[in-house]
Length: 266
Image (tube, rainbow, N blue to C red; front, side, top):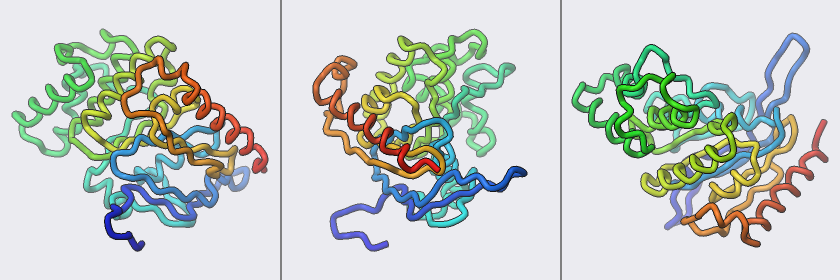
């Protein structure tokens, strides 16, 4: 890939990506001809109907699924090499916290596996708990926290080893709207403080528009990209921005992209 002078290489780059699962009922075409570049520090949301390949694409980035055609690089290397270099943190739909471990113990677990010494573990746990506004909850157990707090702890765990990329698979989908709004605000503040590259899967148009610098609209399976929307909204975004004409215009374009995607449905 040739990079023009003064333009940095994309952090994640997919070219002509296909992925087909072989099942007992025949092949399932999850992704088809997906091409996308994601720059350093971008907040990119993926939106589309259920089963359109949003999570599959995220899992390809994370080396959890293998494409059947095309190419993808993460930090200029293969997803496998990026995984081994611990280039990303991954936040799943469910918090996935071990109930027998404290919140601090859950966050500490990947650091223990990676061989960080105890003093470094302690410092990192304290830092990421402050980042997600859970300072003081290190000795609590998951069952003592609300669903929203558990998801914040899950984000803290993904941040603990300070990867530059954060992959988030619909982390707030099961939460009520009030909690979701609050966590959206907190996530934007965290992104602004850390300048990480974030890839975020969602089914919510308002969430995608509120959070993102770039919105990727995908079609029903096989998942294709029907539109890529670069957001003109300012980086500082109070919740009230959702009532502005600019916000509503972007949301309308996302809806149009979702409707257009059905024209590709096999």
